[in-house]
Image (cartoon, rainbow over all chains, first blue to last red; front, side):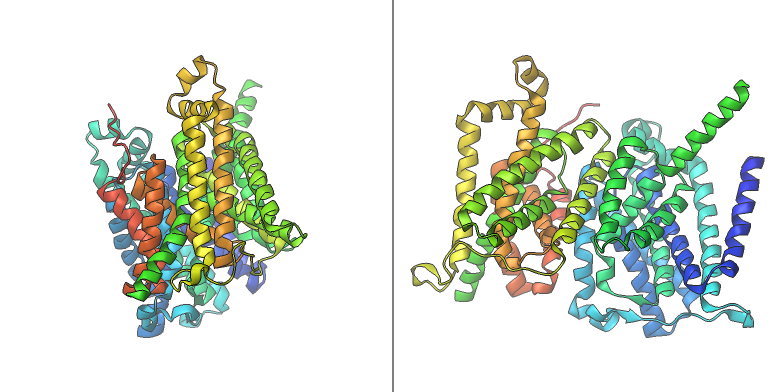
Length: 319
Length: 290
């Protein structure tokens, strides 16, 4: 990081730490969800933005993570923090396994296969043979964790800080992963698969592992989301959740780490504002904004900020 | 045996609807190599228009014809206004635009007509035809309408100059342009036709699944499965796939896995076909040269 980036990062982090003491518990809860979505979007962005594999079904992995956490907490009494690694591992394996056949599928077909996964998942979750675990249509209700060590925080504030720490860790990991050899391999596969293979990159393996890692991020986000919302039910994980994630990465910025955060802010707060117009309004606005971004700002908000900064710097140098 | 026969016939009826939607998908795929994720929502929106017209007091078949015309215009307008600018964009951009269309149509319909489920009339008599006990008139009628649409389309593409021009534009746009075919408009016409076929499918399925903004979600998935089974670039294959998927879905749903997992059939079919035989039963196998 350059010095300027370090300063910006420190200021943002300080603001993020101060936030729960400045706003109501409900707002804190909303910002917890922003962090949750940011992790999920980062996962999807690793796959779609960096590696060029389109997924229209990442809501499925979010759901698997959420259900893993809920089942572990509700049926086995596992503490909430211990569910995250399990949810991540389950999704890593699920994503890897789904990625294996999907390897043979180029762009459009992968989009189709993942779309099918996203559409059919709620039905699988409702399946009555799994009901013992999943609670069927009713879903599972879980309790919100109390802050440990007698900290003087409300439950919402504690969960916010917990999520913040997890998010920081995962973002740091992703940044290191994407900046180095692995990241370059991912982008090489996206931009020119044949050339990448010729350079000695094991395309098939890298693509499946990327799918797994991406699903792991989204799964951990799902687990955190379930803990924050205190409830999982099949119908909250329909195809529109997957589409929301896609919208988040396109608007935040493809192949950009900070883009995940902008995207998360967008998908969390814009529907709240639009909801006041009509129940259907958020999606109409999502759709129109989405088309607008594809036409006018394909690099998303992150790309827009980068461009504006570059222009500003160029101007300053000319003077 | 009787129950089995009943399931097969009901499967053929829904299969006809999948076949129509699959055919619409294949038409757009052949011309542009894009999968139209918004196909289902376009059909759903047209069906709501039909519902409005019928509620306004128009006779069924007049409303039917007007809706087909409306859907055609909708398709052409969408191609010209929304799809044209991303014609040569990367796959992801195109997929995103289709997804955007899907959510816009879905939410606009919800906005105008609310999310309450509505009944949609069937043009066919309520009691079974010829006193048979296997299949309802509507199911039989739906199969008939599907077959009629297929015949019309076949005739159009096979015997009219415009159909020939459209096929040429899809197969070899550059040469077609050289002989004076307006390729852009041919693509738009293809979109219009696909939307019109979709609207017929929507009106045929609405009496069975009832009218609501999310009614086409599952149907679109089956149609994708059908198109893939038949070979994504083969119209005849898509129709065959549609009937096959319809029967499979009904028979498996009734006797093997239960109605709860019907959509999983589509998922397994889609992934299975893509992995084992991506060109489907009748599709061309493409070999790319490095």
